[in-house]
Length: 85
Image (cartoon, rainbow, N blue to C red; front, side, top):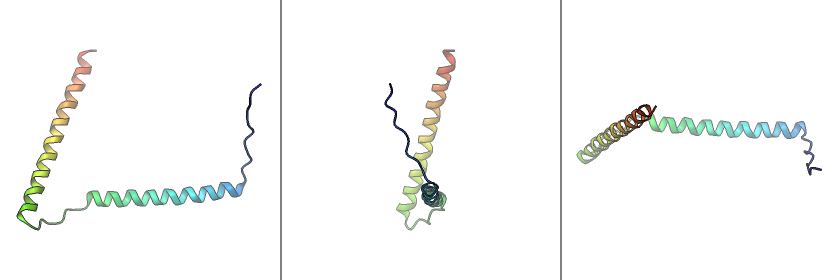
């Protein structure tokens, strides 16, 4: 014999309350995603000093370099998979 529990009955009020709660959570998450996207794609403020301009250029260069190195590594992995087939 199995020891299965009978599920408790759920009322329509509980369902509607849960639905409202989930809608609020979804709206909050949507707002958070929207704010994050705005922050990510907002234009940068103009450089205030020569050092700030230099650091931005350096950071951009390093990001490009990292992207190229990662791309090369990925391509090598993909070629390795196809060589073994």
